[in-house]
Length: 165
Length: 107
Image 1 (tube, rainbow over the protein chains, first blue to last red):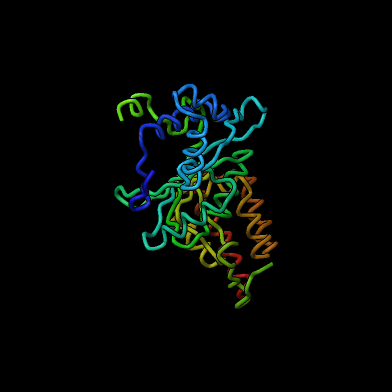
Image 2: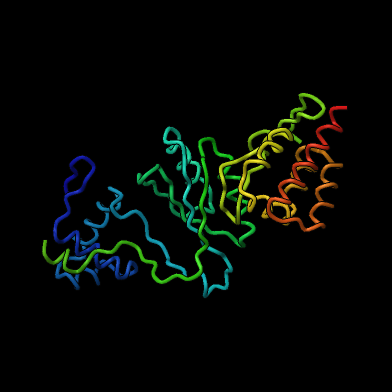
């Protein structure tokens, strides 16, 4: 695997290993090796390199919050900001544990979009009122509370993508 | 309480203690007030939905009492809430209530 401008040049074996891990990150190197027809030591070396280069960032458990009985609410917020300070606002949002995801977008005006969780609508309001609205450069905030989730997945490598390489 | 007192009726709240006007849960209008004077000005400018939202949640009363430490005005606003004013009538009555306090404080 070679790095060019921080972009890794992955070969077909790397892609297939990534795909196997995305299907089941708990399977052994031997199991992945058998599946792909390569030695487990090759799988180990490739995974180690991809971890070192932060291509594989983490291994996490995907928890179904509803089944745990947690009564959190999720909201999508759009923060309209002065373009001069949008980076700082986005960074500040990233520091809050209530904020799960932060993105910026340039449409008609600069916006920051964030996904937030809170215990109740009131706690959500307190967070936006006490921690988002007072940030210098915040012009206004639009909030949508999620009522039903239809899909939530991580980016995954398409089987075709790895086979065609 | 971190409130800087510049004169009897011009207490300035720090940015994190300012009043931020919302129209509903999480929807910040962009208007804020750090003093009673600024608050009075914003009453005339913000969407009346924002005034209704905050009055019936008790947010005005809480901020005026806890941050500006104007107990008498907080009581007046509590009484105003019990009258259930809505729309432009609420805006007018709230403005008159606050301006009366401004005059009282100036004496």
